[in-house]
View (cartoon, rainbow, N blue to C red):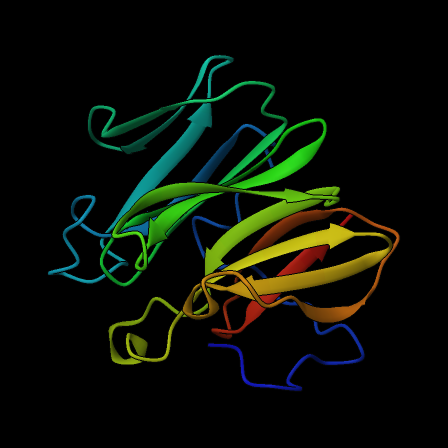
Length: 187
């Protein structure tokens, strides 16, 4: 959970934690996750997972294993992955006309795809995946829109939009840095 009014007005730049320190690739991302989708028993910092778009579908797999999840999607321009407290998938992606978010909706008791009209870039990330912050951690959906950087959080079911501030850039990375702070990279 991001506490209110905690964004620094002056950029504080630090290195991203591995594997988030890898170069930005719009259609592939490596993130930390647990042993299996739906299995948080060993935490969410056990192995590296990869999300990829191959022109037809978005796939998720552990770096050392076979594809564990496939979602057919069209016109994907960028893709991003995070895992919630239950090692449930949260996938954010941009198309040429909107942003999409795939996540488990507790009111529906099912996975759903939500569309956001207007964003020009988006990413998803767990704000703090360390085991002792599980009760407070959240999946953050960050995006740029109309000259501003915004975020939404899972605990609000992504219904509430929070303003970070103005930017003329696109959101390329959103990940924990080596100081265990959530960091945004805008280019």
